[in-house]
Length: 471
Image 1 (cartoon, rainbow, N blue to C red):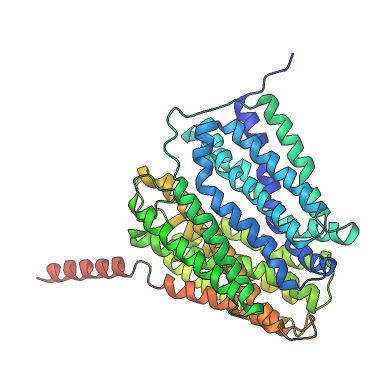
Image 2: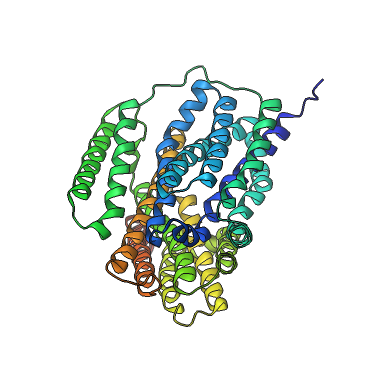
């Protein structure tokens, strides 16, 4: 007879294990891209598709995850997501071409896109409002550690075994969680799951794929017929998608929320910041290994301080916001991170590991302050009834920013490598890091406009009050 475990214990074990696996996978791949490019005989910039395919499929499936969990049951969908993620990890490890690996990464992204929202829904249903803050602090610590150790673990696996083991490492986590969920997790269904926006999904999924394909291929193929057709098709489909979502009553993405000024600007900053950060985390390991001759493990050890800086920033943000204000923290963090991106590109000329570590730690602290503050302040003017739709929209645009940022920066590398006989040149990577800095600088300019109208109003009110007192 099977012993029953407390539902809170079951959810905690399942959530932490699954999220740890997914979070580590998000950073473990980057240090292996240079090795994968050599094994498959492709350019380093071509490996960007492995991250883009994963993040894009994750972003596309995110809006459907909540509906699927409500309609078919959170236990069923969560186990399906785990099975898909784990099975796709095996297929990634077995892949012998870039095309096969991309397809496997798409499947992995679909599984990952289902995991987080359904897991959060289960967590919030199990813990009361009073318990959630304490539970989140306890449960998020191991999940926060995963991205930090990902590059180091990935470097060890690539150097000591094979790049294929960065995917195989997911299998024991996945199998354990699937079996544990089958034995102990309780099913939950909502009586009214709402209507599925099938037409919106059919417009957005191919639209994003076509547009990103055009962005990736344009630098190396130019404005060929294929690039033009896919690019135009992507823009047309996404335009119709936006028009549809603004019109129908139950859209897949509630784009009308972008009418609120603060939410719109925060989403734009998050879009740009995620593109710059994820782009840098893709470009730097390629530069460090392909152009500077470092090993995968050395690359992972150099990247490690960036994650530590992000973790430190998440702890310091409440103090920083209280002392300097959210707008100043965001704008200063973005500007400092942009300058550090430029320094990172020139640090390659001396190739000192400790210089890289210090700069990357600074990037983690500065950009971490900006990103975490944006997440905290994005929803300040969003009503409680719209919160679920707002968080979904915020997560989706964040992932899309990562995909488009990666595509643009990979395109810069390909553009500078086009016609060059040497892949070891430092210039393509320096130009790409400069592009990442420019993306952050644009985000900084947007941040300067945040709260400008409100600050003006406050000043006018104070001036009027002082004038009244003098009278």
